[in-house]
Length: 191
Image (tube, rainbow, N blue to C red; front, top):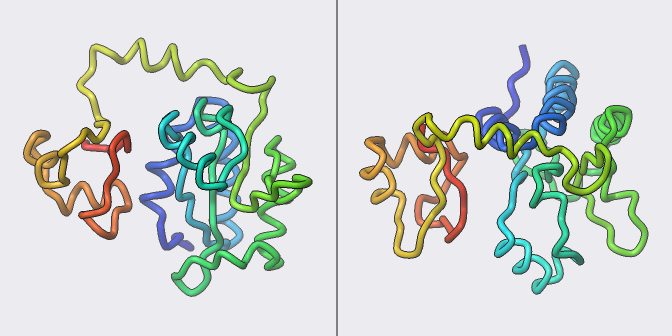
């Protein structure tokens, strides 16, 4: 069976989505796998701080991003094990985008004015309507945390020591190629 290049990272990012969005995104991702289409799902949830940074740098035009509420993902095609940021017109990627739309996603590549080809958002019933995420987080508050938000002064080695794991394990869990590139507010899986 075909295994995407960034499979573990993709699954870790999909896990962060709101429940209905996650269900549709998993169906889309599994369809991609079944059809041998390699993608990297490089971002799902964002903090407000990250979103403000994206707006300030021109990568986004709104502080009301669907990434903030768990209803969006950004992906890039992967060709021969490498990301292809110009690959959205590839026939197999166009098929994957068509499948995502069939499942209820809106593609940023269809937008007028501000084109955002990596972006898929699941509108459900509108912005912030996939609310079961809040209930799920509340109901699991008695279980040990499996994610950690990077704080000022943190390094992967400090985080690894704090959570009885290794830098290598954190890198693999979170798809981090350079252990020196983590940012404040970034959510990391620690278990």
